[in-house]
Length: 342
Image (cartoon, rainbow, N blue to C red; front, side, top):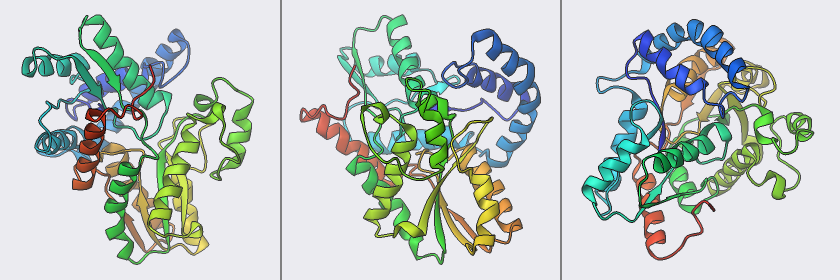
């Protein structure tokens, strides 16, 4: 399961996609009427044309990069395993029920489906909404097979090994610094049960949580920091050579520091040659190809940067395919630790 994409770069299709995406209460967690007025009265009427223009800069002859790459991953994995593989999206026309029905055609006696939300880190606006969407389709379709989910894999050894294999060739590029740009979320999303912790979280401004406890076990911020730290340790990159920022903000109170602001500031700090990666995404998409590789590079170079290289997402990298295959083998051998507790 991946995020999804507009059907085309036409404004009407982008508007339809944005309406579905932004009306999700796990994306914009306002009461329904407030969300409706904000999304359909303010955001999409003004944003659809701008987003359509952005999509046109990355659209391929085969269609949306995210959809194309996810299909490539599906095909690569299918060549490695005997179990049938289908894809679904949280938003758009590639719905979970279509994937379920396609699986049933291949396996009429299907007893169990393992869904892999392609989000390494837990957030209500990504991983959680994908899970609940698939559960809803499973329930409403009255399917008899069991549906289970692979839990967030931000610290999984196979995932980190794949990420290391993706990143390591780029370390030979001359660079002053490595920036991890993660998708931003409102701080309130990670402290729904402890609103008082929001101020503390924002005050950390990119530094690591002091302690790990049951209340921050599913904290998105803690998990993205953990991924960066564990990956850099694998690659023997010292802590002073990398940092973390958050992109794609939609309003106030979002996790800091902001990627666009850091890209403006870094050249003045002596960081003129930058490597940047976006591990919140496993597939390159609008947020990586247009927001970072195009606009991010422009911001950095205008501020005095000399070299800017975005490391591609995992996409259909052989090590990523091997990681997915490895999880399937573990499940077949009875290891259920990687599954989300129902």
